[in-house]
Image 1 (cartoon, rainbow, N blue to C red):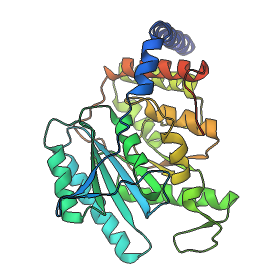
Image 2: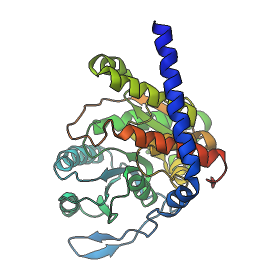
Image 3: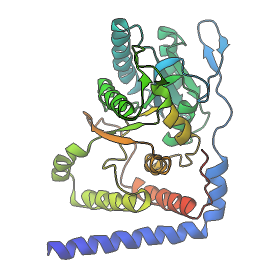
Image 4: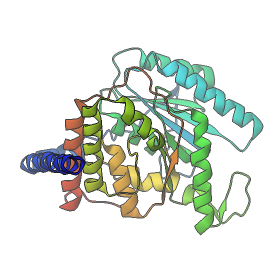
Length: 335
């Protein structure tokens, strides 16, 4: 019975994927325009709330000015954001106090929130200075992927970390990703580390990506979730495998680190704006042959998640769009 059930699961999931693929093909031309031309391209205006003077806007093509940038997308996070930011900035300040080479910035992208998220973000700018905390306002809701893309393109770090506004992953886990990126860089290149040793190439110039993962928690999750949630998640993983290939077990963890060189290639090309931009990042990493490391991180489920069962059809739709876009050549990849 177990084998028969597995075969039925695969057939059902394949049918779902084909159905979404056909629907996507029919509407593809209009969606091509939508996904290619609605990025938020206007440069953000950073403002010092204490002096009310605008701050020059950096770009991913500029040389790095900080060691690390933390990119935090926020949509209606008035209540969860303060705790996460306090924890994040306490960690960064303590580390900077021990190492004067460690410089940082936190970029909060308000993705069209309708609550007090904007006010919370600017309060942290006032408390920590515009050099360390900056806010990008998207005006209307575009999606998590678009918010992160915008933050990445206007950051100043050698290393760029995306993390969620709810604080589900402990910020000090960034050291796990950071250490692995440095290890990968050392294998193939001589580069300048934070102490300025062995300098021929800076870490910012070595393409590498580290993906935080909750895959080690999957066995416990399978035992506690309803059977239909497990069925849908298994189906989603199979569709991800078909769309982007293997190599990363947990594509959806919101804790990922990139070198500046990797982010430049990835976030100038990424098109998906909402549910499955993480999967597109995996696809693009493989295209550019950017080394990917998957690292287990501590993760706690925080109440208030915006992902639910109704998100699954949207995810499948985006994966179908992505697969067709790249495989038909309509979505061009620029190096």
